[in-house]
Length: 149
Image 1 (spheres, one colour):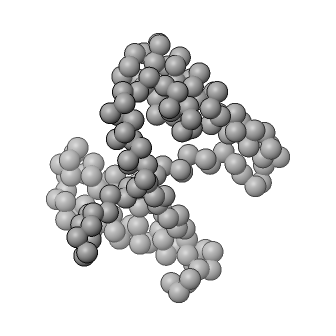
Image 2 (cartoon, rainbow, N blue to C red):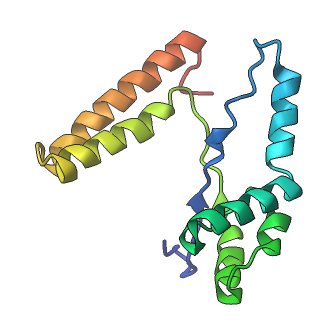
């Protein structure tokens, strides 16, 4: 996106929402952390990536969760350069109470327009905004968060 000063902001959101296995209410929190540490380790990610590619082929090349593992794989040097440039712009999407609804209802809007053809883009998005705002408000009320926080 071009900025007012003429520079280009190439930031894109990450996908860190996959770490939901760690729960404060569980008696297995330590085991969950150990699993996560093992799974994201360089050794495990290299082994998994190589086995996956050997079984399925290059089209299954794994984008590892570990940068050192990524550099140990057989990526084309031009692909590596592109990935490294984009990593400079990676930004996590802020977490908000009820934010899971946003992705769900944007997807629902897309599907109702593109897949089923049952709505116009405007109608689909207006409906999605209403549902998203309703859920965000409900979660803010539930946790006692006001618009000023």
